[in-house]
Length: 289
View 1 (tube, rainbow, N blue to C red):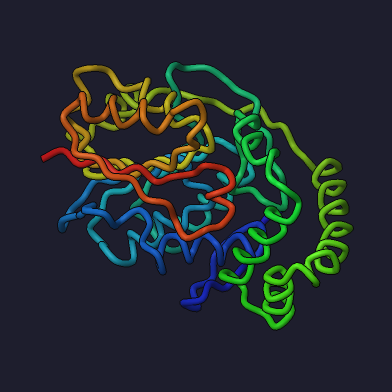
View 2 (view 1 turned 180 degrees about the horizontal axis):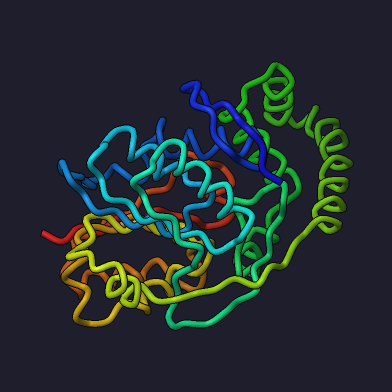
């Protein structure tokens, strides 16, 4: 499932495919999604990377802040193997945990699309929000986002075609069969591994860290459960949050109220992905003064 991929900065890492690696690299390095909007890390930060996937954020931190103490959490076994290899090669001081974080200790079934592992989730219903959008909207968003990750003449032509009504049908006729084939391939290769979960407070106790300077959370729909696993006494130990939020049933407002009630300043932003707008995905930042 994993292979050797060379990132835009020429660093070789283990990842499922080149497109996902380039997408995550753009999010982490080019856009600095988890280190913006007031998020600041000192000389010796302690960082928890929850939903680490193959560990590119941990690798980036280790290369830019060599003294950082990093704990990376990934519950899906095959992705954890890539995480373990990447940390061993590029961030040997970081610790990899084959665990997900939630509101209690338990096991859970994840859905993993081997062709888009960054969307691995135990809550597949989070992607239902976009089903009401038109085929044109999905096609335009997918083409626009793919062009940001791996620009090509074909994608530019497709994107130009989506801008004029006269050529939209032709573009959709070209894209639709591909989408059907991808859907069939996803159905054929979808995996449902059983993964272990624990709580953040249990991890704080077992690792013995005095505090967490940044808690980065990207868990595809389980973000509320991650925060529910923080005991009252542990909230003051967490200084900053960067959380990807799937805004379902006013989840974003609930999390803002929770964090502000715990004494954090919050802000929200939407990454420059057209699919994030269709799916209602935001990044929520919270800083304890």
